[in-house]
Amino acid sequence: RRAADGQGLTRPELALLLSSAKLAIQASLEQGEVPGDPGLEEILLGAFPAAMRTGFRKFLLEHRLRREIIATELANMVANRLGAVHPFELAEEEGASLAHVAAAFFAAARLFDLPEIWARLDETPMPEDARLLAMDRLALATRSQVADLLRAGAGTQAPSLLEARLAAAVKALRAQAGDLLGADARRRSSGLMAELRLAGVPEREAAMVTCLFDLDGVVGLAGLAQDCGIAPARLTAVFTALGERLGLDWAQGSAAIMDPSDPWERLLVAGLARDFQQMRVEFLGRLLQGKAARADPIGALDRWAEARDSSIDQFRAMIGRAQRAAPALPSMLAQIAGQA
Image 1 (cartoon, rainbow, N blue to C red):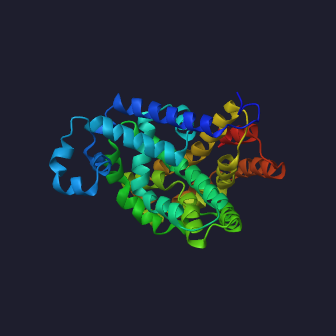
Image 2: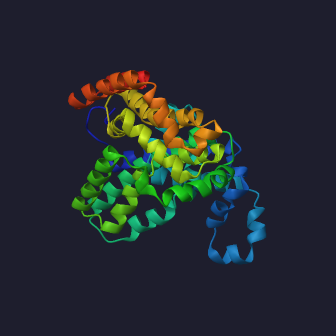
Image 3: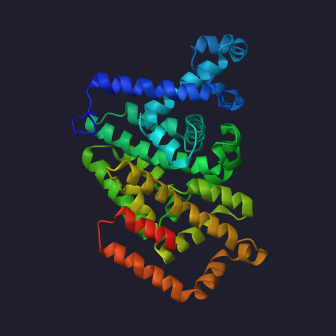
């Protein structure tokens, strides 16, 4: 109630909120299958001193409270790094359990080397306001990756298996992160980098946070590249071309940065941000089903677009009206999503 009235929360209230969030995530994990994933053994071992891990590894892995320890440690990681609110919003937006959110978070941490970024932000000297800003932006970028991983199967597949399925394609796409960005995305990326540097975040750490934003969409592309048997680089080119040609890059970016106060509008725009991403991936999955299309993805997109010139012109005109009516509203983006 205090937060809703604009009064903010005191430190004791925030501490209670954070601890309650951890307990809720932990309870959800203990009720599910996630703690039984052998790939989470590193979390179990990390809960013990190095000397015990060296001399008593076998006994630790057979600990009678193995599930409970993993659930507790993973819940702490999720709440500490995503915050007390993002996990619950993700569960509501994606229709997932908190355990599934935690599983997707674990896979995201491994796929995008998040522990290294967390360590750099924790240890690098910088103004504390700058550190908090960088942590907040990193949590937002992580949230997007977690949402995509939930859609990629985090609710139905063990997190270590999900990571293993996507790891090679994600690595290839991370190596060419700049190619993922259209003109609108490049402007947003430059703006975020400038914001972090102006606040006092060192260049290297600011670049690490910004890069995770630039990698938005990599999870869906990695899954599609694997399913279609297309090199990630070629798939990235046609994905970016589609976003620029239809204006979906702008629509997705507008939804991603929108922060309405109404809780229902927050759910709407968060879902739209992922939907603009997902609809491109699903469209390309259909477009590239044939052997000829897979051999020449850009050509297949060109042929599809040429056959629909009038529809695309009409859609782009609507995008243009929304751009001129800045700031964009949730109702505008919902209409654009329906037309797309």
